[in-house]
Length: 191
Image 1 (tube, rainbow, N blue to C red):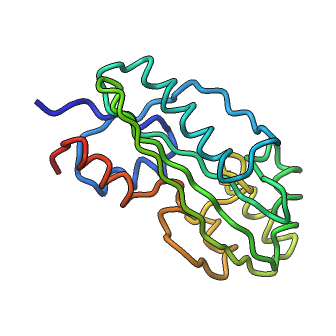
Image 2 (tube, rainbow, N blue to C red):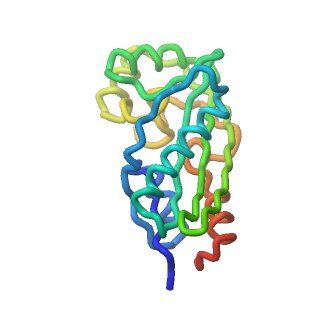
């Protein structure tokens, strides 16, 4: 019998990526409260948050395989989380305009029943176009700015902000698909 697979994320982008694996899964909100700990490096912070989400979901689904992820934008020595409002989104996008920044994603796969944990992370470099205030306002008006680190994602209107991406595109989308696939294979999930 196939074990239940839980994606501890309600992100539409992560759900779409998971569908590419052609396996049955359930997407849920982990209920984990994300707090940015300034003492942690970005690569450790992203893993801390992904692990927190995975463990929170594992408590609710103790016999399932849990997949959780987190993505951060790192720019000029600072972590950019999700903007709290339109003004903060505008400020973030204005700072990123015409520059490059790193996007770091961390993924944790937990077999809650067997207490096996797989952790992976990756980084991409994203180059933004030089943006006008009008382009920033249009992106914010699209409704795609507030639920993403740095105020944008690589789909929808966010794609219009990006000049180029160096690295694995699934890192930019917030789910390391090859890592997830390999981890599920190690846990005996049939594709």
